[in-house]
Image (tube, rainbow, N blue to C red; front, side):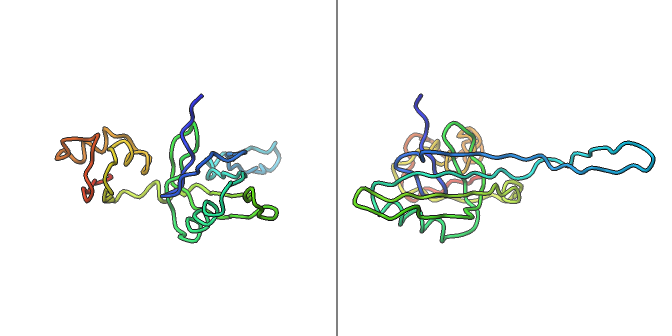
Length: 168
């Protein structure tokens, strides 16, 4: 199976992490009814929590991941074999001692449902050599959606440097 690489914002893992765990929880409350049995009320689902670990073979990769963490805010998280969604990078740890063969790391992301609900359009400026599908993957949308929002794009397979793409 050929899985796409994991990415967060502008950081793309050179090799997917060794382990990734995606947790989802259902929010529920027990209601005590006097003189009767209790009832359970469902209140939706909580945000996804993504944790994992791996090992980088180069120190530069860990430094770039640290920069993505330090940037703060919400960005699109793409997991192998799953849909892309907005998330906040909430934890990064170096595991063990860095050595000549690399450095171990652990991470935690929390889904940012508020960013998913944002309805304002964003504008992405291409660096050249990208396709509309690359931009769609970056923002967790479909190329057809971007093409509909940007009818002036004649060649979606070859976006020139400086081209702006409106992302609804």
